[in-house]
Length: 459
Image 1 (cartoon, helix red, strand yellow):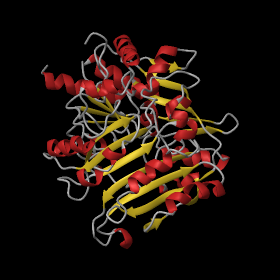
Image 2 (cartoon, rainbow, N blue to C red):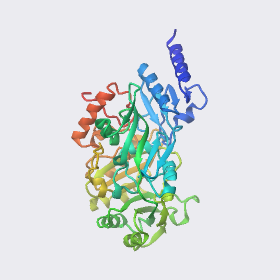
Image 3 (cartoon, rainbow, N blue to C red):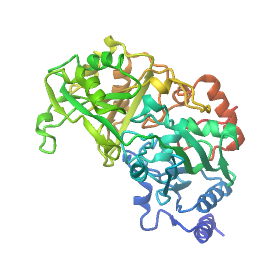
Image 4 (tube, helix red, strand yellow):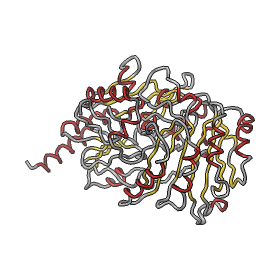
């Protein structure tokens, strides 16, 4: 029997044992299934397993392991880092169940669910997840990477509010991972990303937040060049209930753009206050006093409308980014950004900085692998990019961030491949060593490496 015939028989065997879709490059729907939100690159697997149950995941992992194939996992595909050629792609978007227990203030979230689904299920009970700025993002991958969301300074990382993780490891076994059941693996999964297996679901804590005071204040950077510095100063005195960020980008002049923003280099100050509306108004007043303000969308919002705070595009596109975690924001370095990453830059740049600290800086009740908690701010540069432009865009990003002294990077905000040193920089040194030891224990052959990969100890 030829090698091709053997592979075909193996795929047929997988199809017989799984309740989900199994696709190969010559079947209908292959391209749609392998293409995620990130359109710069896509996986080109030999087999796609469109799983619907835990057993499907176990069968797909065993199939890959038996054939010596790599495994990639994709739901929304926002953070695609390392496109896979060949191997098995496990597509989890069909596993999208969410079950809320309002008395316990918890939610069970399956691997393919988005934050939008979790928010919708929690909202009728006056509860909210520690979700991010874009509701369409996959919830599980966000949590595994740490999770800095709209309520981050008040409640901390989303990973610190996980109670249980169901995980299929490289041997095809299903583990119910908790702090009591497997403390080491529970520690590693929360912050270590998808390096230890395929997560089929997580139990997360919900918080009693039904509404927030939030939105955006928009300013023309040319008219108000000190706007970034004004935001930085303002963050030094706000309480932990206030989480905020700033995005700076050039808007095109086309009719699809709101008239007041057309053709301008805009700084969008994004604020989210999880307290009484009147207190929020008072806290935001110093920012509202900056003039001229092009647009003001800050208001009382039900948490179900929390995506309006950042107003991020929810359409798939091609992009790359680079980011730093910072102990502070140097005003002199900050002043270079409008020139280095503004309209005159060689590539269109979206600059984003988030105010960290507060609960993010404190150790959780149950330790996790989330690193660099001492960071006070994150800073990133993102650009739309077409194939062949990656190197030029990466150079623009490096130049824009060069004036800043970072203490590492955030894996969740890294859109594109990272070298080993950059991945290592996301963790405290002792934690990274521990992660490599656990990788050697649970995935010594690196079945799962199509991500921001952590190698087994000794590799």
